[in-house]
Length: 377
Image 1 (cartoon, rainbow, N blue to C red):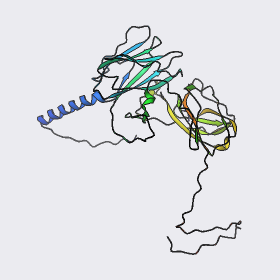
Image 2 (cartoon, helix red, strand yellow):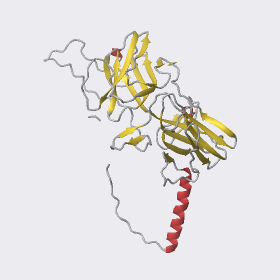
Image 3 (spheres, rainbow, N blue to C red):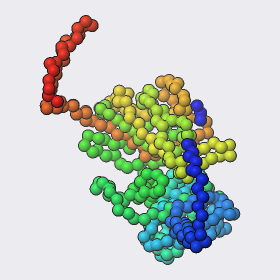
Image 4 (cartoon, rainbow, N blue to C red):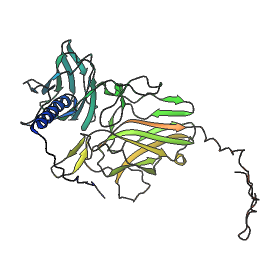
């Protein structure tokens, strides 16, 4: 294949006196105004004429400059809230998307280039700290082209809360209302390179990429192993794979299995519906795979990816990448984990009765002797 249960609530009629009606109306208005201040807000571009803006967001401006520019006046609700800004945009070849803040402390460059040099639709987030948002200010997006290339911008105010975090996590976590928690470093506006290789106990983590790259033309990754591990796992982030498709993993020119990247929450603003009602996703999705070590060997090993429909069960051993024509696909944060410790043998519990089985072969007419009954639990 290429690619709700609805529960109707019974009607309820309530009669309120005039005084209660006024009180309830006032209560609702106050509640809406308070929630409007901190509720997540998505700004669509180009901005619709009837677009209602929250109280903390001023009227957007697009001044006539050499490079396409969008100015967004922002009034911080308090001195302790951070602002998570998620941008959905189309990268332009050899271009840039610069993000800056002009506030009471002067001009600050938040990201000199939000692009990841993949030349396709992308989604990235930027966390702006309370120390930057002191007082009123203007958030500016500037593209190195005559058009901005931004489809939408999502704003979410975040506050500090107590939480339980492993002592091994040195950075603080950022948790939006939708999606998983991330380290704040992931939202610093800079290029997030793959972490360096690491050796923890007998687990070796090998980075396979050092930046985001396009792979639809067939990129072959290679790794040189001293010996074959007892188990292996690969993990990455991908962008561009259509919904309903999965990635085929080829190890040393042999089909190793398939990966279906995680499906984001349907409330995620990365979902886009075209005029023909087909839905695609703009952004990065996680994928992981438990690799069969029987396909690995000492020396140089190759890894390759292709795609197939969820309903396609055909396969061959050609190992050739076969992505659909004109379908851009990118990958980043690709790592290979290798375990060189064999699994610990299961030890018998000495408190339980122990039985032994015959060591020789059992003929079809022969059955092992039944152990005597015992009252021992």
